[in-house]
Structures are given as structure tokens and as C-alpha cells.
Length: 619
Image (tube, rainbow, N blue to C red; front, side):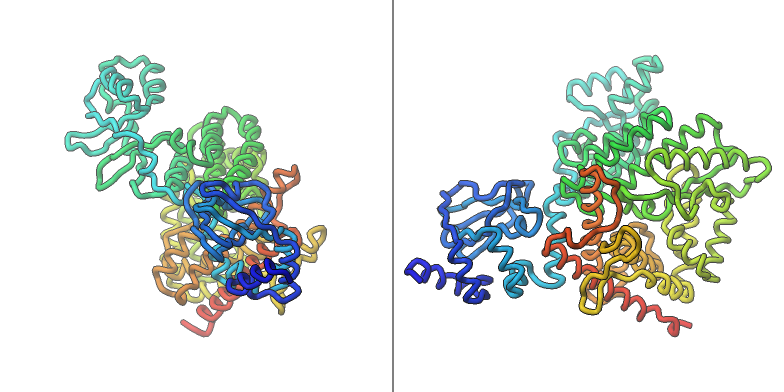
């Protein structure tokens, strides 16, 4: 060993994780090591470029950044970086530049991979072991996406234009031109928000209808518009726009409007395809035009994944898109068949109601009718409406439900009183069939019509479900039917059915059992939330789980969901039919280890579920 190698060896022995290497592994590093000098301010790693080396800082200082330019870490002598790109995709995920004149030891990717696979202590240190490792892997997608790190008030570029409701239209238009605003706030005498008027309203409600310019603003405003608080996330504003197909959102602080954000503001951020797609859905004039948007839905899904959206963002956006298809199809049905003869509410069920929908999905829906419904008088109308919508959804890429949980099935078109009686029967006298139905129907959302019907059903589920220990115990037995794919030695247990041999169904063995156990806990604490992540927040507040368990379940849900989501996105990009079946051999070692951690958390959570709601208790 020459003098230079001796010096390098002594340096390695002072710094983890290189001090965990065996003599043979150390010699492998020394014989392949490269040394580079980087001048202060010069780039070392550029985002999305090939990741070919693992860097160890010999002297100087380096700054590592998230993809949005935010500082992620600042490192000095002995610090290392570049491992994440090597462990996943061989592309740089965290760019880096020299803060000072810096000397780096550069270990080639094949050598790093060899150390990672053969030296457990090295791998553990680089990754950070157990749940902490999983927590770090999950947090990266949040940190990398500005939708989840930026508050909505950061999008406000100017003070709002606020005018009283009696202002004539011509004067209001003049103010909008002078201030270069695309929307204005309408206030009452006390300067409280009562409405909003956009430039589109001037086109649709003034010019198109030939209203006189002296018409007061209050006659064309949108009353009590949806608003967003100044400290809410950009993501939350985007989902509000998607859900309600609105172009502008007043931003509130201490009860006052401090600005207005528009869709064009959000376009500067991410997921713009989702916003544009919802507009295209509502502008469609036929089922054929809606069906033509299937490719756009897939493109929007892939774009969100490419932009590092996390599972909550993807699930919420895809659910909003699916809800928009339902709403537009119902509008088209009313155009064809006329207004409903009695009030009704179209329900979204399952993953769409939970806002956890992905690109691989079928349709779960139902129809609640007013108690004045008469089969003889109204049955034919609602049969036509339900068939039109369900057939339209199938044409748009939302396959028919194999279990026939659809409004087109007469079994799932009932008056409100009958729905209440059915839900009560499922809770008070649990049966295998009733429990299976509860897993789908007890995640429900009213998407069209008299949504108060849906609110009443959700209230019944909460009040009766939380007080019936027998029902909760039965739901637990049902939730434990699907187990995580871990063997005795925590190796993956593969599917053995048909063409999907040697894969793992990430829905059946991962996200679905997690959603099931979360639902049981949520019912027991009377949670009003439908989304699994929101339910976990309610569960945590109720204090029914040991400290840290909720965070672990949340991380497990996110990791498993993202593996499933990325798999589907890659299939779409490759022109293949997306599914839920992931071959773990196609994952990196880093991803496989994180996935095992996530499945172990699911297993532990199921064991706790069994203990907490065992049938001998609470009888």
C-alpha cells in the first residue's frame, strides 16, 4: 500500500460507513477510487442526469438541494451524497454543488452497489435502518413537491379588487382593466365577502345575455364562493378547484379577503393537466367526447407521477377526475331524459369516495332516492338514468364492477329510508355478505343531486358503527382476511395464481388491508373523514394507538401506494395494460427493503387490530 492509499485508508477509518468495510472491500474501493476537485460554486450533480458515483467529501463543503431548489442538506469533511440516485433509477434526484473549494473521493456505481449488497452494516448506515429509513424515503416525495410544501398565500401577486354589490357592470369592468385582474370580490356594506365575478362571467352572463351596462354586480356574481385559508397548502387549493370546477378562489385571512388565486396561478406549479382535464370533461357535449379523454386521463396520471406527486395527491386528483366524469354524465342524462321526477343523490363508493383512486379502477356507485319515490311512477326514469351513467363510465375507462355494485343494479337504487334500514341491518346483524358490502358502502360520497342524503347516511354509519362492538369485531375478522405478503423469514410471498405468478398484488395484499384496518379504527372513534390519511389523523387525536404507530401506518400506506402507482405509470408509459401486480425482482434493493418494512408495519397493525377488538371483549 503506497503512501497515498495509506492516507485514504486512515481517512476512511475515521468516518462511517466506510469504517465498516472488510479488508477485501476496502481494497476494492482503493483500486477503483477516483478523486475530483470542484471549485466553489461549481455544480457536482445535476438533477435527472445519470448517477455514476457515490461521493465522499475529503475537504471543503457541499450543498445538496431538492429538485425545487430548496436546500436539503449542507455537508463537510466525511459527509457523503449521491446514494439515492444510485439506489433508485440511476438518475440524480438531489442535485449538489460545491459551497467551498472541495475535494471528493468518488466511488463508481458498480463498487457502491457491491458494498451495499455485501456489507450489511454499510447498507444499514447509508439507508438508515427500520422505520426511520422508511420515514425518510416517504418524506422525500413530500419535500420534493412544492404543492405539499408551499402555502397558498405564496401565489398571491397583488391585492384583491373589492367592490360593493351595487357597482354598475361597466364601472366594475373598468376597474378590472385598470388593475389587470381576472376576477373581483363583491362585498356587502360591512365589507364582507358575498360573491365573486370573473371575466368569464362578463362573457357568459353579461355579453351573451345582452344585459345593460348599468346592471349591478350582485345580479351576475357567484354567491358564497368556495374560499381557501391563507395558510392552506397549494395542493389543497388545487383539489378544491378540481372538486368544484372553479376558476378562482378567494384567499382568506382573519375573515378578510387578502387575494384571489386562479387556475393560471396553479399552472405555474404542477399537475396542470388535472385542472385542464376537468375543464375538458365539463365542456364535453356527448359520451363520445368524454370517452375520447381516456388517453388524457392516463397522461395526467403519468405526469403527476413524473412530478413526484405523492399518493395522496395522485389519489385525490384521480378521484376528482372520476367524480367529474360522473357529474357530466348525469348532466347529459338529464338533458336526454329530463329532470328527475323526485329528488335523488348519486353516490361514489370505495376508493373514489376515499379520494384514493388510481388509473386501474372499476366503478362502484349507487343511487339514493327520496322517500316519495314510487317504482311504478318513477322506476323507468331512474333505470334509464342509471344505465346511461354506468354505460358511459365504462366507455370512459371505468370498467363495470364485477360485483355489480352499480346504480344500474336495481338492488342499489333505493329510497333513503330503505338505505338507512339496510345499513342498520348490516351493523346490528353482521353477516358475511353484509360485511363485504360494508367495506365498500361505508366509504360513500354524494357527488350529484341531494347530497344531504349522503350526509344522513354517513351520520348513521358513524353513530351506529362506533357504538356496536359486535359489528367492529366482525369488521376486524373481515379486515384480517387479506394479509401482507411476508413469509416466516420476512421474505416476500408471491402470488401463485395464473399469469401473475411471482408478483405481489399491491392492492389486495397492501393498500386494501391497510384501508380496511384504518376504517375499523376510524369507525370506532366516530371519525367524520373518508380519506385514509385523514382518518389516521382522527385516530391519532383519539389516542387509541400506541405512540408512533399512526405515523408508521401512514408511512406504510404511502410507500406501498407509491410502489403501486409507479408500477402503473411505468406500464402506461410502456404502452402496456396497467395492473396492481408488481414483480419485486424489478425493484431496487433499496425499494425492496423499504417495502418489507412497510409490510411488516401492516402485519403489526393487523395483530394490534386483532388484540384491540377481540370478540371476548366488550360483550
